[in-house]
Image (cartoon, rainbow, N blue to C red; front, side):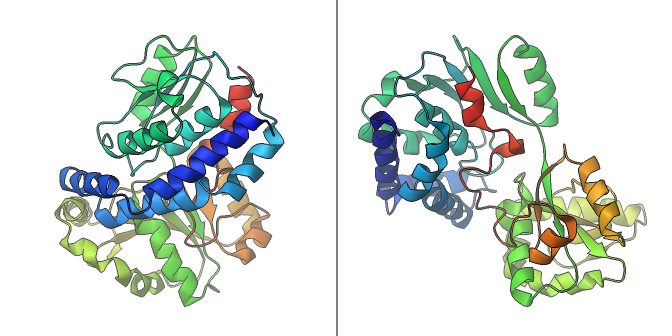
Length: 342
């Protein structure tokens, strides 16, 4: 590994230390939570902890970057990054990839998450004093050679047209699913609650649908959701709950509900906020085919070792969907390989 890459790893490790117990960052966390109700203080701290532990650890960074043999010479290919804003600091991994690969970049933030990243970015600029000359936060991308852009399904169509002549990684809405076998422990189910409710379900790695065995009693899941009963006091979340519950009741749509979530049998993958879909399966082979049909909609599959063996698929352990590692590239597209090919 070249010396410049090693230095950048050192800078990132220093950033992790600087982010811990930072009064400046904490003040911005408080302000963000006051302006963006779905970004609660606890959820922001959870996102920051995941970044520090999974993406800014020296051993993990070294193991991640070693196979790529990144060049010591910085690139002149300019990258434009359009970040999403569905969960706190969701665009950090895109920035991290472009930073370690040595590309100049412009970063356009989402209006839904426009306070946290600038503080983290400024911290790194004070550690790596060469960074401000090569990376800027901008209101509009200009003079770029390639693009990494994340948005909704509607913005994806706009991105496709607008960036049609540029090398690009474009992302749209995805959701995650969990496969249950009925043998899960209480600890598994409590961890699954995190996969479902963390960040109010807005993340592409949030579980929006369960696949359960034919005879599975779906009401078994409800007691394990009690740790998120506090959402009943969150007015913005409950606005979604009340709206969706009203639609179901007006249409006489069969469903189950407790105080914070409705569960509906559905073939679709993406469920509205405050709702959880489920579908029954009988044959693992058919289920594997079903998941393959929806590969463009699914970010990750959550399950236990039994599911991994049953489906012969890579699965994310219960409770880990919102703790992506450095190699958990969004949509499965390897950003570093993309950047090396430019």
